[in-house]
Image (cartoon, rainbow, N blue to C red; front, side, top):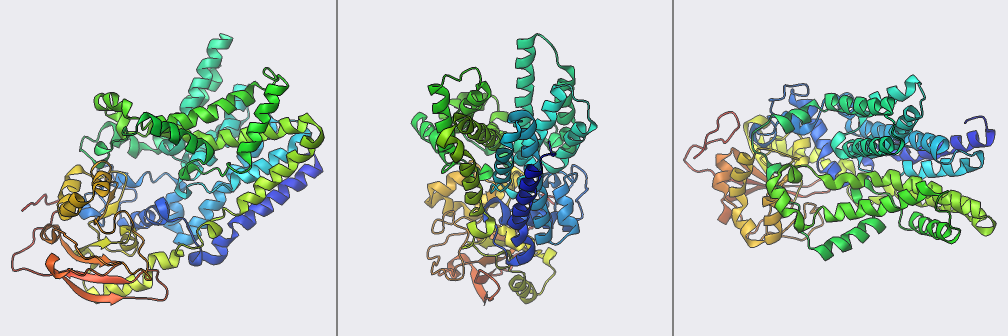
Length: 574
């Protein structure tokens, strides 16, 4: 496979390009621009909180004291057997992030290259497509904390196909062992492994032969994932405490809305598994499909045709998972709400890029101008992907340093002048992750699941604001992952930077409940004009050249009554 010197040079060049692609993370460090949604606003703070919580390897019943009065289960932060957790434990945030990105992207390149070169387009003349498609795949703006949940699928498929074909190399089994340590079963591999199981079943029925080694490989990787994700398994099977996930309702869209969403997903994709296929890859695959029809290559291109259809089916499945017609089933089988089966579309990055490689091969085989165009189209996609580097894509967002604003929040901590564990805060117009990252104990949070008991208590603080705004009411009541101080005037915007002119004029919070829960201060990104009506006193405004925010520090005006702190340990209520 690697004997061709020209191919070796192409691989070396691709690795250099990939190294340059991740280099801004190492060079800029905290001055780099990163994705905010489901990244800076959550995961990066989670890793830091978990590292400093003292319960990283705690029991399945352990709680995280810094978040929502100790109601948050340790299990909400995932397994300690994940390599990404230890990267953040041993290295500063940006070093860990850069290393994680590098590991994921290089593994993605290697996996896709091995898969294409050995099983999809193995001919030597197709090497340029193997290298370029793999490089483009490795540069996709994937969800950072997903690690190899989607980017690792080509490597896993390569190993599975090797085992299926009778290869006895230990490397295949090593791949199936190590991937679960840097991927998530619920964010990709549940869907991949169930697809592999279906593949095995169809093949067994067709050939009337049990490929035991292939079946054992699927079972083995599933078993390793279940061991690694033991906290998730425990929470799913044995934790009977009602949690916020129990109030997640997904079946709400009309039929025609789902039809529109199908085509939107098919053409544009989804931000968690962004493939950036619209401009180059989609037209190329449609052109290749036309060539198959024109030249009647039905039998020769069965794999291409299967993937072409599967690509659309996965988009339709994603869209129609939200169809309101599911409601009778979700009401009867609760797990259909709590587990997101729409994520079968997480298979699309693998499908789309393998389909792209096959499409380029078809154009090459067509000869003439198509043959000359094929490698150029592959290179165009690679160049196109350079513009989706995080530093380019998020250049108008705050840098990591500006986002977490450690210097500014240190000033706030020193101004309050009490040990952080003795009081509780919440944020308005700011993500709670910022306060959490800086060591504050918060009553608000963004987490996948937490006790419903806490959600109901927290809701009392923002009840009047939810009554004013149906959008945030539905968002909180029927999902609630963001347990935020929502307001009618701010809506679902949590990024009010220092140049904002927005103010809150008609805020209505139940600060008595906030106080009873141990809350003392609000960190607001905007001034509150009717602060006194909410029993709030503006203590000080904090500004910094190294921060994206202007923080208005409000303290709840004290009363003579003694507050009752609502905590998981005390279970005390007024």
